[in-house]
Every structure is written in C-alpha cells, then in structure tokens.
Image 1 (cartoon, rainbow, N blue to C red):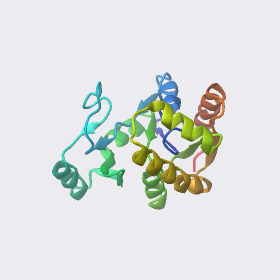
Image 2 (image 1 turned 180 degrees about the vertical axis):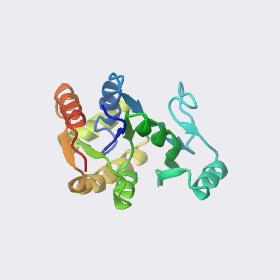
Image 3 (image 1 turned 60 degrees about the horizontal axis):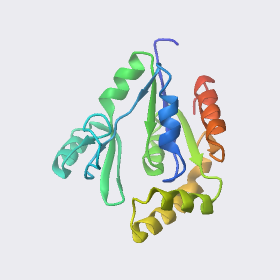
Image 4 (image 1 turned 90 degrees about the vertical axis):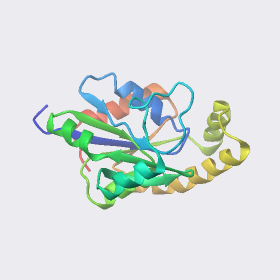
Length: 187
C-alpha cells in the first residue's frame, strides 16, 4: 500500500451484522478501527478507549465546538461522533481506516465530500432483522420498535452508498467486504 491510506465506512441498520463484519475485517493488520465517542452509558464489559470514548454531554459539546469531530449525530437519545485526529494519523500512515457508523453519520460525511469507500450492510429482509434484534434480548419492546422503524428509514438511504452488501450469509458478506476494500474502489 502507498503512503496514503483509505477510509472505509460501514453502516446499516441495527442487527444487520455490521459489528461482526467489522471484527472479521479487523483481522487484517493493515486495518485500523475507528473508536467512536459517545455520551451513552457504558454497557457491562465495555472499556473506555477500546469500545468507545465515553464522554459527558458537556465534554462532547466542547469537542464539537473545537471541530474535533469529522461527523457527529444524535442517535437513540445519545450523541455519537468520529474523532478527526486518529483518522488523519491512520491515513497518513497508509493504513485502511475502518469506521462503523450509523447511516446519519455516513451521509453527513458524504455530504461534505469526505473521500472513502462507503459500504451498506443490509439484512436479507425485515423479518430476519426483527428476529436478530429480539435474539439480542437487550432492548425493551418500545426500543425494539424504534430500532425497526429507524432500520426502515436507513434502508431507504442504501442507494447513496458505493455498494450494498446483503448479509444473508455471514462468510459471503465478509468476503465481499474484504474484496471491495482490497479493490481500491473509492466513492
């Protein structure tokens, strides 16, 4: 790889398999994962600086005002954002910088012409998505319904991505994402 890296954005609805795909892509030593900042509460087992940068609402707002984020958004009642400095360092080092962000953040980045490869991971259908979210057993019925409604809204935006990969078979989905990342295609 040359001296300039490549940014890869992966997004899609909750339950589509984005996190699993990203974990597998990260097995490649050339890939560096973007750690998002958030104001949401830590879940059991999560570590600050590994899973997220956990910030108070005031800290988050201060970073927004300082221009420290490439993108930021309100999602499910919390703030999330991608810090600029780690991405700049990875790209300068010639690495692949992988961002797993929601559709709102990805489209914000595309809207200000941040170059990269934008990949949308889609569920095979919404009934399967419902089963996956129920199987997590982490949300109340009200939160589940909000996530499903948001998933429908996000799914409509898939046409704005460089590629849509349907996750009906995890291994095939991962192979396709790896192929696209290695292809040098940029949006």
